[in-house]
Length: 118
Image (cartoon, rainbow, N blue to C red):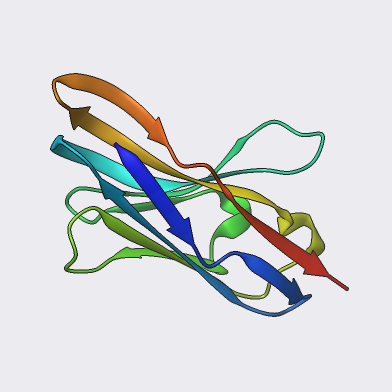
């Protein structure tokens, strides 16, 4: 599974950014898509996921500020981020849970950098 993310960049505190990710390859099925992030010097952490039936889940610190969604394009996920804070600065990784060519597991994108400055 290849995961292509787009939409990272720099924004000022309180601003907004939208991330998108598209999964491709020999996908058998998808169970969930989502985003994780890793700030400098910190471990990778959960941001938000959305299940194959559209059920979203968020980390507590993202609730009310981030919205994860899918559109009609297969295996595509979007993350709308608003009211961004300096602590949101991180590399954001797209994540896919499912099966490809019989291999069930997690698949990760290369990451896109989000920088929030004051």
